[in-house]
Amino acid sequence: MAAFVPPLWNKLGNSFKDLIEKKYNFKNAIIIKNNVQADLTLESTAYLGDHFGDFSGLVKTKYKNKDFGEFEGEIETTGNIKGELKASKLYDGLTVVLKATQKPTGKVTAEYKRENVSTTVSADVSNEKTVVEGTLVGGFDGFAVGGQVAYDTNAADVKDYNFGAEYAQGDFVATVKTSEKADKVAGSYFHTLPSTRNKLKTQVGAQLGWDLAAKKGTLTIAAEHDVDETTTGKAKIDSEGIIAGVVEHRLNNPNVKVALSAQWNGKQPGTTPDKFGVQATFGDY
Image (cartoon, rainbow, N blue to C red):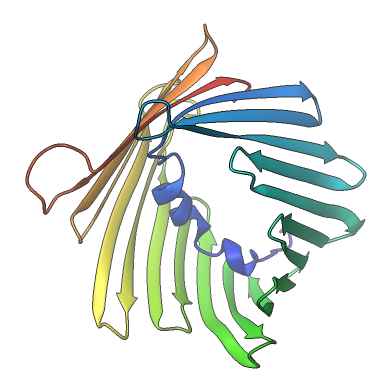
């Protein structure tokens, strides 16, 4: 049996999080993505705002080096600059991540994963404060449990602390995790349904989030379904009445992926979506 390496703290619950967040984009955009070389990718994005002629954009570069790790840089037309350097070849199981912006702010994180244990230590530095965070997750045979503590060194105060547990077996993942000093707790499950249609799949999930201070809960249900090899649909609804959906279709000539996203408030009258976005991605998507 292969050794079980538990996920990092920030990966707990990611299966359901991806189900309700990925592909939902309510901005109108044209994206051009090119694999210039096997280890270099360039991506340019142009956004159309709410008013005609209101454009913005960004250019993103990603470089992978088999002997070191990878670098990702991003420049926006607003002047914002982001950079991330990930060194994953320094030591077996160790990854060091350095993030920086033009503000200036910076964050350095050391991630270490080995059999039955995953841990991180990070320092998030800005002009106003420095936050040091530590996480630890342990587990075996698909079961993982862990916690997180963040400390503001300027205020000499514990900024955040949380706990979580996850069980993953095959195509099923169940997670319980707290946030905001354990004032909020969320329990979720994610399941990939078996399919006999090649690589086509259907994913379903649900989450119950509970705010202990407000004594209020929110139930979210979501699903993603591959209609065929070129078309995928996603939908989600929560107990607050928010309904959203995405249809993604891929063409071969021209090589483009088109995604239409919309969101409605079911408690409000009318059928006009509150949010709507169309994205077209050309090239090596």
